[in-house]
Amino acid sequence: MATTTQLEALTTQVRRDILRMVHKVNSGHPGGSLGCAEFFVTLYQDIMDRKDGFDMDGLGEDVFFLSNGHISPVFYSVLARSGYFPVEELNTFRLLNSRLQGHPTTHEGLPGVRMASGSLGQGLSVAIGAAQSKKLNGCGHTVFALMGDGELQEGQNWEAIMYAAANNVDNLIATVDLNGQQIDGSTDDVMSLGNVRAKFEAFGWIVLDVEKGNDIDSIKGGLKEAKAKAGNGKPIVILLKTVMGNGVDFMMHTHAWHGKAPNDEQLAEGLRQNPETLSDY
Image 1 (cartoon, rainbow, N blue to C red):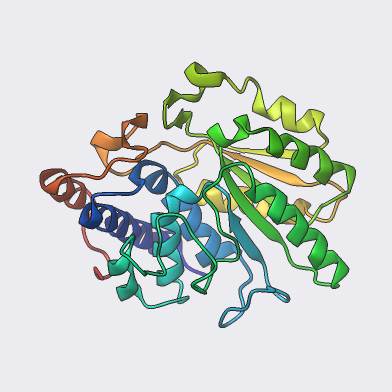
Image 2 (image 1 turned 90 degrees about the vertical axis):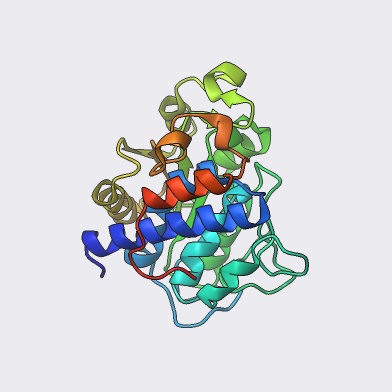
């Protein structure tokens, strides 16, 4: 297992990857990607039980599904730096015929990607199906899923949330990225979610809070607690309170960088705030 210092160093490098990928093609979603960098690094480097190599069935290991697929830059960076494909391939982000499209796809066979995502509100349903499949196949591993808080305004999620509890899908750990922002503004201003904890509890889920969603030790503790509670008859959700744009001061606490690329000057400033820790691709 990696130390907190090692995970923090990798997180800084991942932030550099995100900024450079989006800047090169003047397209992409840096805000949510930066906000979830610590989560992805901790999940893949410290929490998930992963096999060598990659296969689509995922039997004999933990698996992850990204529902809010627009934060693909952080997903691709962590997959590459976790050994799924060459780090140099990050240089092809959003280019024509690249395997690293703006939203993850499966038709190009990119290792680490098990579902196409981008149409919000669908990833949790896929994760529930995978979790039930694991049970049917006698696989005792865990299914993880990540979705955005704005995504909870999609009705399919609530059908899935109800279904998972009714069918005791207790090998599922879902995480909600509670950054309070979406493409049109704050989630409260666009369409308030109200008390998210109370809603999940009313639907029969175990709910865990990670108040410091950009602190690696806090994330690690929340994910380990969630894994320890799996198998108790209820699905589990972690409410991860992150800061959109975390690590780049002018991108933080605003929806303005949901889907906007930095210019040359902004890139240089963002990279200055995140010095190279491993090596740039």
